[in-house]
Length: 263
Image (cartoon, rainbow, N blue to C red; front, side, top):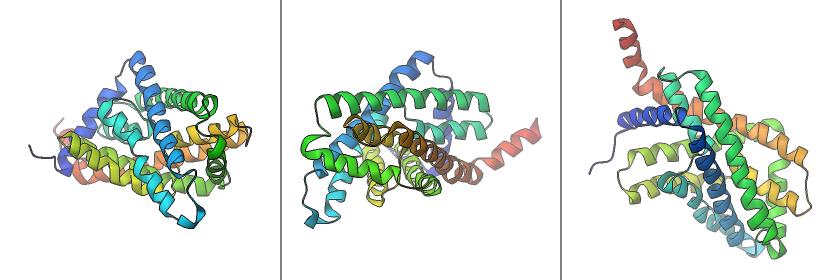
């Protein structure tokens, strides 16, 4: 069973985008919640791996955390879930191909974002705070990580968001091209591990880590909101411009022009 070529992946991404844009509201509620929760669980694993590592280990602790963080996107893409950062790529591909309109794109992004947030907050509160998995011995790591996110100025957070979702969207792209579970997992793993190692900002991941610090009595919801806006916009630019638009130009634009001419 052969994996898909990049040109074939572009067709699959468009088909996926159409399906996502036409999802029922109930589907968006359930799968959006799961998407936010799964990303939060991946981040929770990161905190539990790195939270008590000695400072003398340097960046090795980040490497170890980055190695488990991709669990979240694997659960979404292989197990089932909707993630707004992945939809930013797939749904915009369908929009570029004129298979859906901009209102459908906004509707999908809006509701998946809301239910991703609910899922991430659920894990941050009940697993992180209520059970205490991001507190106790792990609180210092949780707060330090959240402070690093919220201390970035708007444009730094925005550009960091671009880098993040360029890689996340490529992980989704590679997953679409693989035909086996093993291939999908490998396609997801390395781009996601890379964005975590680099330190880029992901809007749904931040929906977990910053509230986890807030529930423990640190930071504020205003800082959270400012960060989320900047990172959301950067994530959108990373997906739409650096993946959807460029690959659409490379693989699909000529065909659309020919179709329009024929009509």
